[in-house]
Length: 363
Image 1 (cartoon, helix red, strand yellow):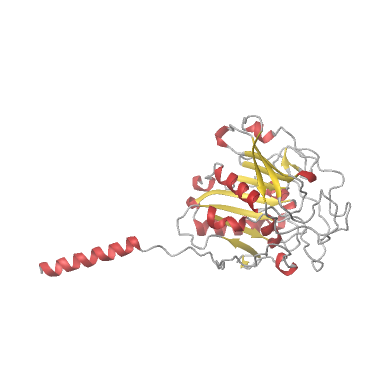
Image 2 (image 1 turned 90 degrees about the horizontal axis):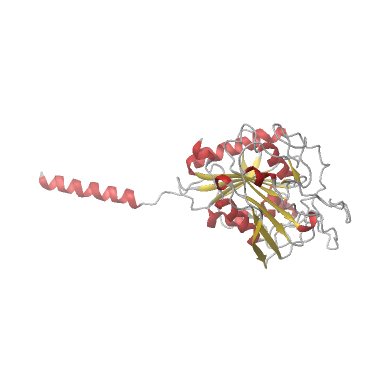
């Protein structure tokens, strides 16, 4: 009997040891296979129109609409991540946005989960809000609120204006820790030049066009008012209304798409930050993936030329109350639509990771 008990104890210890040392299976999101390279990833140059105009393979179950989801293939259940909802600009597409702000290349290194949705009309409207909320709810449920270090809205152009509209809505205000405005309006407006726009000095081209086969962009709709916000009734190019909820804020812009970047920031004043200071220059030897027009003779610098290497200046307002992050990033010699280069993309990700988060963990 003693021998049998000893054998049973050894077997139990072996089983326990196996349970402790066996790694957990990687987390897989419903309907979102994880492969490397990521699905529908653009080449370094000349991304085909059929690729860049894709709306994504993941189906949002309640609306039947699609989106992209990029995440680490070795993500473990319970692992802490940063969640990003990335919104495309007016007349654009999900996969264009995914490569304009190519944080998909950073998901493994910086443990990001990035959802990039798509509006079939190619312009965001209140009718799309439930779809965005459904995606957000699904991801929070699958990751676990306590495992989300921070949650950011990122949006280019009209997508940034839409982020501005929804960030303090009843659904998002207690979830979102920060807003990354990718040429999508600044709190404390940056005035755009008179030649700003796709047809100002070059043939009209849609925001998402990368080849002659890309369809034309629909007409820009009126932007819906932002409820509960201070400032003008609606956001516009270069300008955001002042939100009424707490969050971190990063504004990035091309040098040519604004007349001048204001030194003051009402958002920095809100958190009693110090005067803005330049902290570093980011040098990119590699160009971004996408751009607005395939016209090689385009001269409209404010709207944007073809992708190319560049330098970006990173400026922050230090000492903000509660450790809040308020920052401006200016891409030198760039306009509105050149895709972000890899080094400046990673620097924006680093800023997001360094900012305080945790709204979802506290809810």
